[in-house]
Length: 272
Image (cartoon, rainbow, N blue to C red; front, side, top):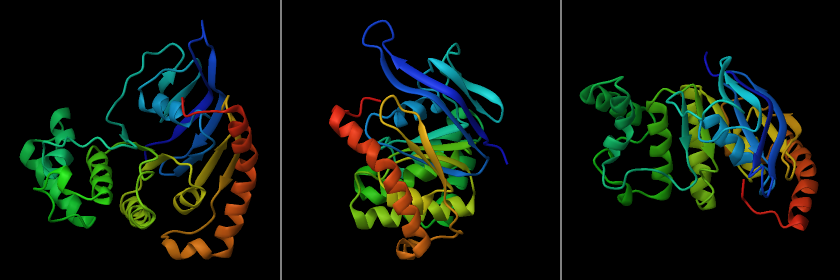
């Protein structure tokens, strides 16, 4: 399976000649192909900076990131996004004046991989397989928040990426909708495993979704610990009260509490 991600000594300094804000430094993580990695840490610890470097939206100041042993980010390379890395954003990015079917099918057509009829056929099939049949001709404004997030995930998967990047995609959802969309994401992941790099502040969400949880320190962000979630799949929300889940939650909470306190005392904001 493609999608092995190697982060080696990654660092990022904003405005090195002026403010010299060290967003993250010396981050090293190995994520195997098909693994679900969730990154947690206090505001300003560099989670989104790291995701942007993987996505090809920003460069690094030091170190490098490799995808299937191909460099995709370094201090010298120009940032280059690509269809092998698809991002689901916190605030959504559906085209509001286009139908759901167009939003889902447009990527492969624009890339020249599929014709419009073939892309639409595959989009309908994929939406049917994940329980979204019947909304293809609707517009994004007609959808609920949970439906929009599910459509965005399906749209990303239509591009057949090596890695799926999600930047707190469920943050704005209410608790009930969030639980439904979390289970939807896991169903899609179990159906067609991809390497997933997911950012969140929610520790329950991190454990529920992840194979590994990377805990980052406050700024400058470094890796404080890596916790392996040894809970079998498939999963549903009944496991939130399971003894092993509660053990992992306590371990993560202990690891991140001190960092969150440092960030609060330093007045950190989500700048990176």
